[in-house]
Image 1 (spheres, rainbow, N blue to C red):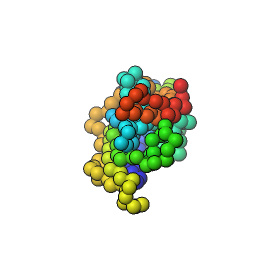
Image 2 (cartoon, rainbow, N blue to C red):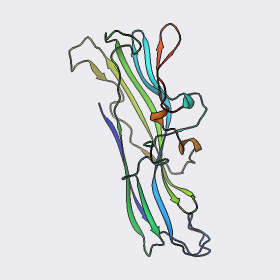
Image 3 (cartoon, helix red, strand yellow):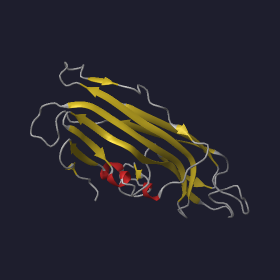
Image 4 (spheres, helix red, strand yellow):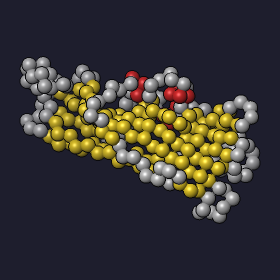
Length: 234
């Protein structure tokens, strides 16, 4: 099963301000300058519940320890290369100002969810399928921001929230093609544009990103939890 979020913005921007112009958040209080202006999207993950696979002997889950333990407020969901941006293709654009007129720019992101779950207990040598349920509940925030590359000032233009919830019932004893059943919610809520922008937590702007920080844990019904796959970033 694949879920995806497609977010697109059309920016109408005039870059450059005259002296004493208090309406310009990026270049206010300055004379016209030739500056580089970057607009793009940042995304953070606010994890409620990890991606969890439940079986008769207990559960395995992809977890973000620092986030779950409250050590950080949020974690970056950058591609791991173009920090702090979500990506560096359709997710960003560069504008050189001052511009003589309003200019139109389109910035978009496409987020796909491809879960990978094992049928068997991940710490067992047995390949017997014991998977019974899959759960996911995660919340995300995306910011549309502009950065003055001369001063590194970052201006938040828009803030969005969305949540991904997934519940799948699994019966490995049924015929192939009939083993999984999607439970509520069948359809995902659409992203919500906030009427008031939220500040960006500092931890959402730096390494590690969520993929490099996640840990695969096995939590048996009896005994201590085990780390199956450690984080890439320590």
